[in-house]
Image 1 (cartoon, rainbow, N blue to C red):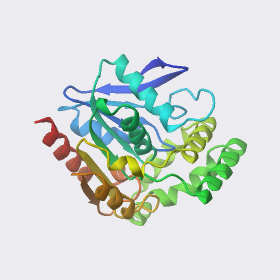
Image 2 (cartoon, rainbow, N blue to C red):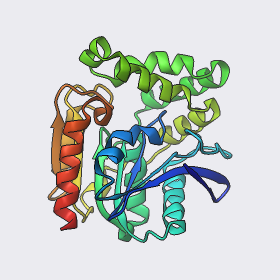
Image 3 (tube, rainbow, N blue to C red):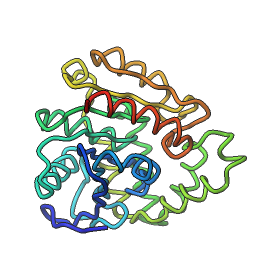
Amino acid sequence: MTKLQVNDIQIAYDDVGLGPPVVLLHGYPFNRSLWTDQVDSLSNRYRFVTPDLRGHGESDVGEGVASMEAMAAEVAALMDALGISRAFIGGLSMGGYVALAFYRNFPSRVKALILADTRPQADTEEGKRTRSQQVEQVLANGMSPIVDAMLPKLLSPETVSKRPEVVKRIRDMMFQTKPAGAAAALQGMASRANQTELLGRIRVPTLILVGREDAITPVQDSETMQALIGGSRLVIIENAGHVSNVERPAEFNSALAAFLTGISE
């Protein structure tokens, strides 16, 4: 792990492997260790840069709302510092929101997009109210209420009942998130723009992945993205929920490797 000063915060990140650069952005409320299985499997062929987004993992919280645009700008600044002009940009859940914001603001720096268990729409008014309530909860009571409420929705029923090691990994990751960082990210997600109109203007190869049992960003959201992003590929991962890359790493890695290889050659 290395830390780098980016704007007003220190960003923690890993930079592993040799080859074409791949920047992977974790979801909320996780950290860069979300991508361990992908890095371990594919870093013999690709250079993986996996930052902790602001307020998550070992990165600083900073001041104010953690908007998707601010986090995208920090990713761009990190790439500058690492001498990466253009990369595969991927994200899961909130990381997908940041990846779309990155494409909107830095399209020439995106070689291809990887959008996993995410969606283009903004929050509904009800969704914004829920996030506001969660901000109050996390600042008053820490991460426990968020973890308890989210965990059953993040994983498939099979994972919850039969794979305690995966449940523990996700739970531990969530508890590593700073309450102030979680609150800032919740506010940023609540205020994020609707990116649906952007999808038709995406002109780079795009891989969309989603767990068949994703209750947070259902398959229908990914099907919408595929329909609007010309030439995009959709992979539905069976027996997986919202963190499909952790629940079914072999299937996720196979799809990711095939996509990266097809573009790199």
